[in-house]
Amino acid sequence: MNDRKVIIEEQGLRDGIQNLDITLATSQKIELIKSLLDAGLQRIQIASFVHPRLVPQMADAEELLRQLDQRSGVLYSGLVLNVKGVERAIETNLQHISCSISASDTHSQKNTRMSLSEARTRFADMVALAKRNGLKVRGGIQCAFGCRYEGNIHQNHVLEMVDAHLAEGIDEIALADSTGMANPASMGSLMEQIVEKADGIPVVLHLHNTEGKGLANFYAALQAGVRIFDTAFGGLGGCPFIQGATGNIATEDTVHMLHQMGYETGIDLKRLVETAKKMEKILGQALPGKMYNLLDKDIQFI
Image 1 (cartoon, rainbow, N blue to C red):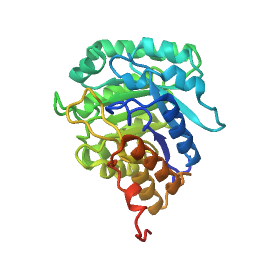
Image 2: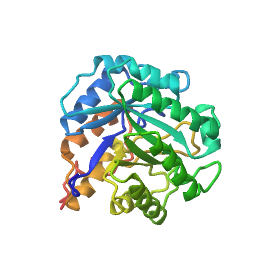
Image 3: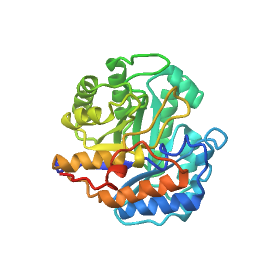
């Protein structure tokens, strides 16, 4: 991979909307996805296969995929948290899923109603089922940098989980700062070790900006060798099962900073901002991202 190339996986249509008070229509989701594609996004997580009673926003996952135009070079993904979710994904035209479990036992029980021990066993079952059906699998670890219920998550525990994930034959390994508790020092230290462990398997980082450290943590991971990041347009996001959860780092803010530093993303910042503006109109309120507001003003940018 070109060391100056950074891949962005857009999470706005999954993580970004799952905690909203209003439920978006499938047609609205389709329009937003098309807008993201037109801006140059080539990886988009568009749904999670979870129980609609728990996350009503994701109830139309199969219908959304049925209506979605397939574009060459575009990777759509879906989040699965259990075997049932994998089974649902298999019945669609998805080719890539994210199987994710938590490093925190308490969060695991709140998020999936499974203990961490049970979740780890089920993770192996999920990966095996997906692989038998020809799906590419991103193996994820949530709350890898801290838990609002349990506090610090020890690096050795996370590294051991990474080893276990890799042993299952996953195609990518992903770490999530689900609670936004990481700091640049802890981020750089852990991600450097994980990039080394992965030994060429793509490493992905999912960041939340709960404590305002999202872009600082992003930069620390970039320096450690990570080249695939999850972001959400407008800074949308937040898990309904984490106390005080707020949005992901904003796609526009991340892309702008990367371009300033000379990295390539293939993303048109102005067209990306148009997507955030569309969401602002749908919600009737401002979004937490910075650049989508600043680009409307008469300000000179480098």
